[in-house]
Length: 113
Image 1: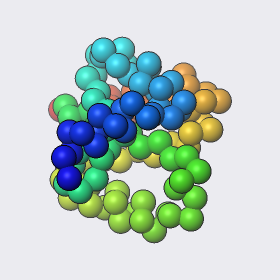
Image 2 (image 1 turned 60 degrees about the horizontal axis):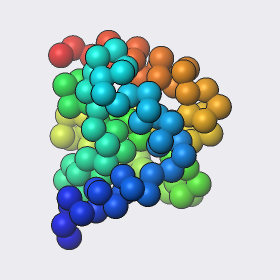
Image 3 (image 1 turned 90 degrees about the horizontal axis):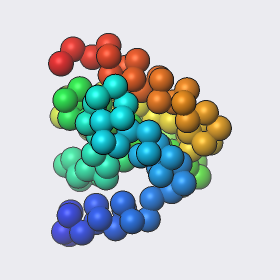
Image 4 (image 1 turned 135 degrees about the horizontal axis):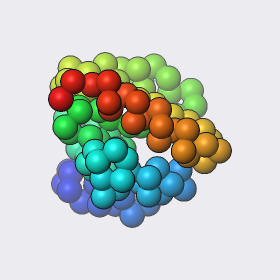
């Protein structure tokens, strides 16, 4: 599996919620923190990653319903690499993008760099 090709495909096929959040965090728009999207980490692809703070932001849509155990195992695996994983439902991002960004920024500011 070519991880770069998969990451590119995921970026091209992003959900509306991912587009909204990306517009809020790209180009250091969120507190000057740099985010990348669809980053391969081990066998997973993280939706949004701030490497400086070791924070991953995951957006959960309908595909995640009924997969809570898998998501929990995935979060635990990513934590082993030193990441803090934040999860938001797509609906939350679409209904309150500013509030979602504020919550992410609060976490970023609380992490020791």
